[in-house]
Length: 371
Image 1 (cartoon, rainbow, N blue to C red):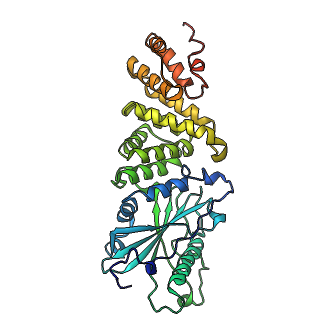
Image 2: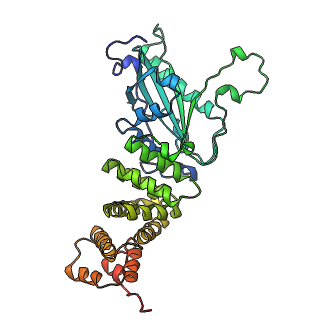
């Protein structure tokens, strides 16, 4: 489509944003509807300035990327996914200019089922049809304008290998009577679990997000990998760090959280522990609604305790003081004196209690028996 000088904002180049509604069906694969679930986290990530551009620049085939001015990528608000399927899929539509001044769409479908969806191409077909239906609503059925090309992209982050056919024709029987008349299209697969950790894009927020999404569904989390994730999160914008920790608190298995919190406390500033505690407190009240299990608190407290188990005595006191202050307000001089006089084992016991306790007295109750 020829450029008009306003290709990225001209309403004739973009379908109107569809209305988004909330899905209410709960499913184990659909953890955490909302911003701390898989789908919400991906949406928040792609909304970060430069993140969609960085992802496309890193993952699109060179022949396609070279034909696009990826710095012009803009998001179209809304979702084309049927509300009945939003427990398994999330999506985002983008418009982008080509190097020749035309307009193209890039449609990203994020699948967060625990196993690949063999018929994802059928889902894509419906969403692509909805995009063009809305384009027709804007331009009219009698328009002579060429229909903008759409590049379908599927993002998958689970551990099992992607086994769905790479195109629509792969769903047909092997013997086609009229192949030249049969519908076919392909899609670009971004298999997050197969991206090497060290080769994740350099964009700070996107890198942190891809690492978190990848390892949320891996069977184990090695300490070295946890340190890599913690370092990536530390380099992200503070607001996005909070979003990422919120996602991790809900999406990661308890054992993964222990390893990650240990790496965070070992390698970074104590403020990270404060941020985790603050978010955990806010999730405590939301737990019933978004399915957060009680193991979160166990994972945080044990992870923090283990993370400083080899640290200096003063480091234990500093972190415990910060956590007490964050949860219960100003820490009095008498309590500070009590912390300074406690042995490491006692401090560790208090650290284990600090997230579950309802009051300061509950944390400091029952001193450790003398061995």
